[in-house]
Length: 91
Image (cartoon, rainbow, N blue to C red):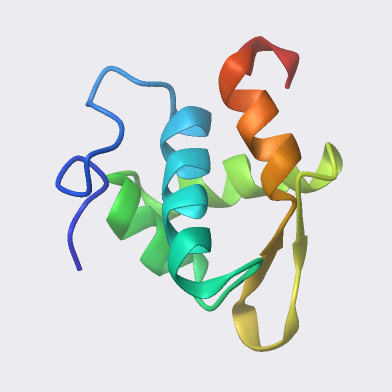
C-alpha cells in the first residue's frame, strides 16, 4: 500500500490527526462510509506508527467522527471529518 503522501494527501509536517483524516476521506471516495481497513493499514497509509494511529482513531471516536464497524473496519462521518480539516484544532 502507498502512503498518504503518494495519494496526494498530507506531507510529513501535517499533524497525525490530519494525516489519518485525509487517509479516511481518500478511502471514503473508494469504499463509501465504511472503510474496510484495519488500524494497521491506516497507519501504513498515513505514515504513522500503529500506536499513534490507535490514539488518533480513539480521539476521533470520542468526537463521534468515526465509529467501529464489524471485522475491524471503520465507519466515518465524512461531513464532520471534512469540517475537521477546515479547523483541526477542534479535537
